[in-house]
Image (cartoon, rainbow, N blue to C red; front, side, top):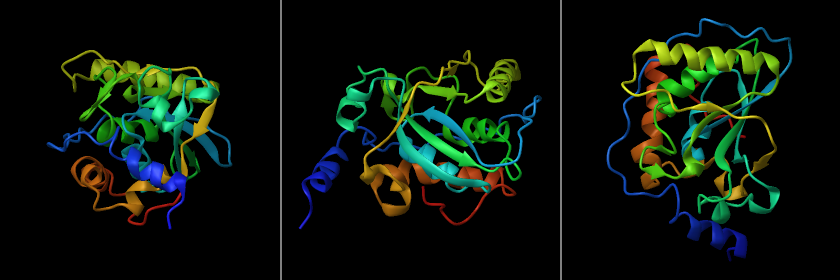
Length: 224
């Protein structure tokens, strides 16, 4: 017998991150960062918002050096940190992913490159793929001065790259508090590989990671 929370989770799968599956976005090889991150030893945290968090989490869970990717909400208040509230697009929250990574294996500057190559189109405002609303905005949330410096330099670099025919819409957002999403959202791609949205929109992102970054791709999914 399923619990009430599990039933609610299944019902909400028919809401956001569930738009009609049309065609996946095309991967674009973003340039290597001109400003490399200089990070001390030890695991670090980074936060990325870029559309439905299932795909963001799924891609980073296949990156070597990432030890955890957790789906959640960032930008709003604690009272609104729930899937049904955030899906209204009125809370200030973005669907986001908190990434734990080892800079000895993958530096912070390499993470945004992967992010903008295969996860999020940096020139889209308040939408990604089939999903639209402020909760699907693309944003970098630096945690510390080094990440902030690298993130600002990289967004400026993307703006000059000519890879996108529109201005860069992705912004740097000040860190507030990250709220992990409900349990049924965690490791969603691994748990539901045949779900329609995952097959149409998120599995192609992982395929793009494998194709464009073979040295950074990990075949196994790292649970969050």
